[in-house]
Image (cartoon, rainbow, N blue to C red):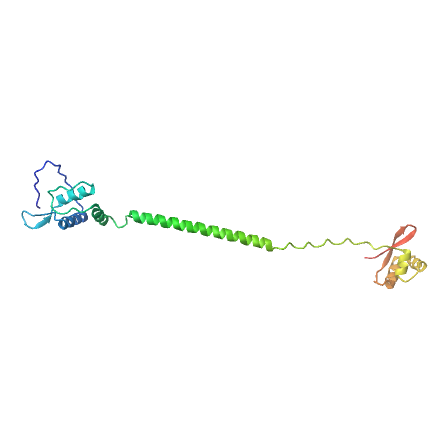
Length: 206
């Protein structure tokens, strides 16, 4: 292997370059005229040491030494070289920004959709409540009015007279019920229900 002999007081740094970085650095040196001839082979070879110095000089923003041949690449070119050597799964700054923006947009869209659905449900609920007609309350059952007639009124109902009615009533409840039912226009059987205001009272048998 050929070695460069440099008469300088600058600090010498020894580093072991990974193969992929060595390839990229060699390409950079040849592209920018940073080369030398091997002492043994006589062939043109990339001056890796000089290339490293110029890459670092440009990266840190210092001016190039006037004695160095060739044109030194700018910072963007160095960043491009570095990006090619990074693993493909390392996210870039632009990719991270784009992902964050997409996530924010998706969240806003989801929130807007939830608000719309909530408003629609509220409107539908209000409409449903408005459409509901209160059920008509069923009328309370009328209390049955007890039908009670005195002797004179019942006689007229049965197309008879008080004396005839009294005579049949004295023959017993069963007889009176059958007789009154046969005479009643609604076929109601009647029974004696006591005396009120000196008059016999009668009620229909249920």
